[in-house]
Amino acid sequence: MLLEDTQSALIEACRRGETDAQRSLFNLHKDRVYTIALRYSGDAATAEDVTQESFVKLFAAIGKFRGESGFESWLYRLVVNACFDQKRKTRRLLPLVDAVVAFLKGPGRSPLEDLLQTEQSSLLRDSIARLDPEYRMVVVLRYSLGLPYDEIATILDCPAGTVASRLNRAHSILERRLKGKMGRRLA
Amino acid sequence: MMADGNMGKDNWLEAELRAQLRPVSAPAGLWTKIQSPGAVRGADSGPTRLLWPVIAVLMLLASADLLWEFSKARGGLRQTTQPNPAELAALAASPEACDLYSSDPARLQKWVKSRSGIEIEIPAHSSAVRITGARVANVRGTMVASLKFEAANDRSERGTVLVWKSGKSPVSRHVASMGVFGSRGASPEMVSWSQGENVFAAVAAEGASAREACLLCHPEGTHGI
Image (cartoon, rainbow over all chains, first blue to last red; front, side):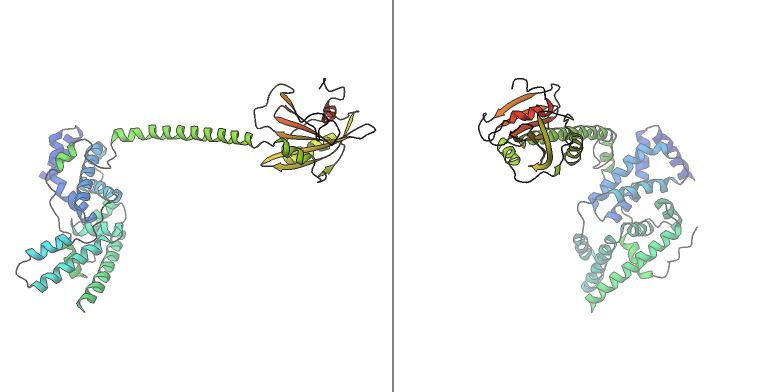
């Protein structure tokens, strides 16, 4: 309740154009906004662009926020739209650097286990990156932010049933791809 | 709230997804970038948005001007494709017969207009010459109507009046220009003039006078030509 009151006060102050309030609101939400952008795009530079764009749009349009939906849902909708609009210039096909870093840092496991774990992670990220945008966004909102179906439905402006079916479909695709690739490599 | 039905079904996959897509912290310095004008690539900023209609109008004007220049250039090209005297002489001397044989000026006028779009006026009666038929030909993209005539004298001299559109703006004078290609007695004699948007060329058969063609419309005389 205290957080909600604080947020409402910040929103009001942002409507008046107070920079300190804008900064506080930014600090309150920047990590989650950046997380959506990064996990959706798979690219840090693109995620930064999306985050900036989302907050610029947020402060420009905050006067239009009427509170019909929650502020977070409204903000995340801006982020989702920015993600969909973003024309990614550099597609990251293989997150090799992350994989190598994880391999070098991984403690307490055998090199073979580490290698397999790293490869599996790499395959999963690659498979997520190849999902259709609608499926990928549902997966990101669900597993990055842990949002319930209803809230994802509000953000994506679709029925909750659609969210469930997209998530199911995404699971099937990912499972099939991972089993196929891992199965071949481990055979 | 809707039940989240997938929980537990794909535990290994869900655990992997949670691990792979775990939340991250935004990098430092983002706030500074947001505050600096023009920092956001591709942001729909106000001034840029306002410029688009202006740019669109300018592009439209430039396109219209380009089209105008192009159409003018085409008009210029059309002038250069006007039939030349040699082509006219060949057309007049062509052994091909008329497409329509008639001495009815109204019928010939209608026929020529329907085939070539050329509007000509031939008086209903002329005591000096008699029109015998017409033909329409395409000379390098220009439709040319040929009107065959013969003099109403004992020699029955024959000739051809060729008519085509000049492609220039109609002129107000009855006869805008007149020129004689070749000389009297040469073979064949040709007289050319323009009237309104049409250009006329009268070509006489060998030994005859092209000026007889003037009698088609001016039975009272040829104005001293």
